[in-house]
Image 1 (spheres, helix red, strand yellow):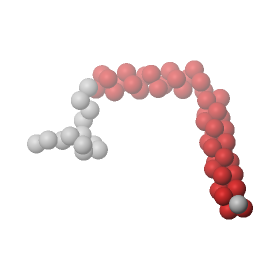
Image 2: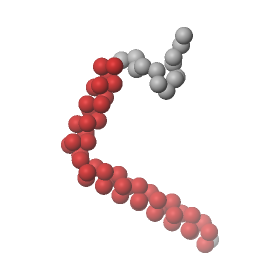
Image 3: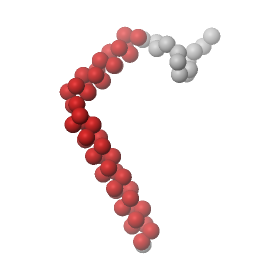
Image 4: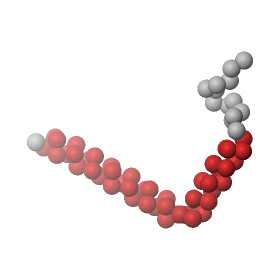
Length: 60
């Protein structure tokens, strides 16, 4: 039976999944909360730019 594409199928390389988790964990520890604030700030800037474009398109 082919389990390809199923969301709960076992990963093909469990060691690769662990390595990916470890990499993400190291990234979180190295960037920490400041990385989260940077992402939030980037999201707010993006929302502001989109809102400005929509506002300008409605005015003109």
